[in-house]
Length: 207
Ligand code: ADP
Ligand code: MG
Image 1 (cartoon, protein in one colour):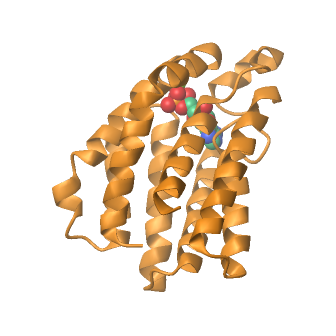
Image 2 (cartoon, rainbow, N blue to C red):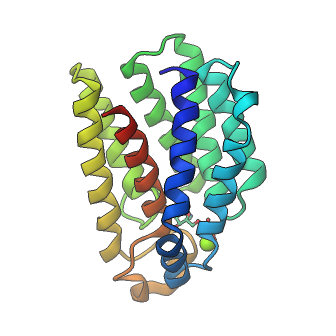
Image 3 (spheres, helix red, strand yellow):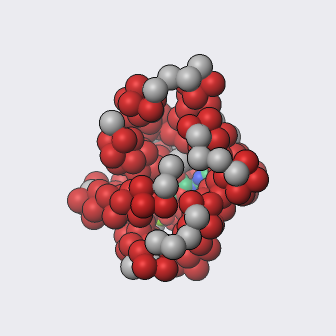
């Protein structure tokens, strides 16, 4: 993966987030405090504004810088978690020194693991991890069998959607929605939705 692809992805992600304003806002209003769209918009826009700064960097350095920027621009629970994802991913790419699909799969999984550790959360707690963990597992498995990137992208789009939809019937045990108990049932988790949107956007750029 080249830095130019990362730059295209950041623009596409920003556009996707902007076009899902009402959905992201109402999801967080239903089971959170309503700021998730604003948080995501602020982060995505700040990254797009860094294009000229990111352009000359290697992919790992660009991803690390994206993480640092998110840390300083997105508030809430999601900011530091998403920031740590990009920094965790950057670390693996830097250490591996190559740009293969396998490396990106390993890096993605490492990024998800950092979120897991930082957020002290796991699968089934009605968070972004309900999208990220299944996607990381599938990405790793498909990359290991040398599946081509188009097929991987198509599979990850489906898995992300399933993970996002699955949060609807869960009780939250992490994040703001945890205080709602059974009242959170029937609502998709906003962080799961935005992660599904970001993954789908990037996969569509590939396929
Ligand atoms: P806040 O909850 O502080 O208002 P946001 O609204 O931006 O921040 O983000 C909320 C999202 O963050 C949730 O929908 C959930 O997906 C995610 N989240 C919250 N806590 C955790 C956690 N401990 N681990 C993983 N994800 C979390
Ligand atoms: Mg919120």
